[in-house]
Length: 219
Figure 1 (cartoon, helix red, strand yellow):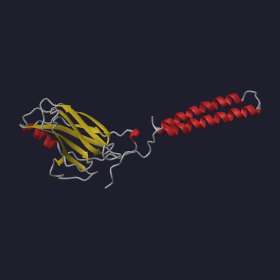
Figure 2 (cartoon, one colour):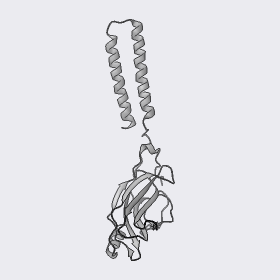
Figure 3 (cartoon, helix red, strand yellow):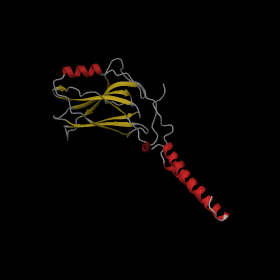
Figure 4 (cartoon, helix red, strand yellow):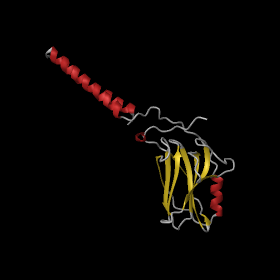
């Protein structure tokens, strides 16, 4: 429930208290007792509303505009599917979590168990770029590079895990909250690259308990 919703609930409860108070006031009773009960009811209603406002996460200021980025990796996806002889990897499980590197950002982590050992894993990403990483490379010559907060289509590569060569764990760091990212995955062995998975898109959801999200800087 949002902050406004909790406030509305507090007002409704306070109204019930006030209604009971009015009902009691119309009955015969000593004036002093009526004043005392009235003050107690008012204090209870005020404490209730203030408690709700204090304990409810503040959603104000967290409305982040969606940046529309062009998707330029479809041609590379189709070409890889036609030229590669290896089957694609299974669909990766993925999750958005608070960034390990930059407060207010999110990390995208993808994991899967490959059928064969991998020499290198890769994810192609389209969306608002996070931060410079030596494991990133461009996909389309129309976008050879991008600064943080700019639209980009890029590859993020992961090394082989010698201890578990079939286990893949890719982390794309410092992405922007509430932005949409599209991606597909592939892997490389000594025989070359695999076919890619299908393209999926997801929003980098930000949870209120993580604090304040970082908006994409205005250009």
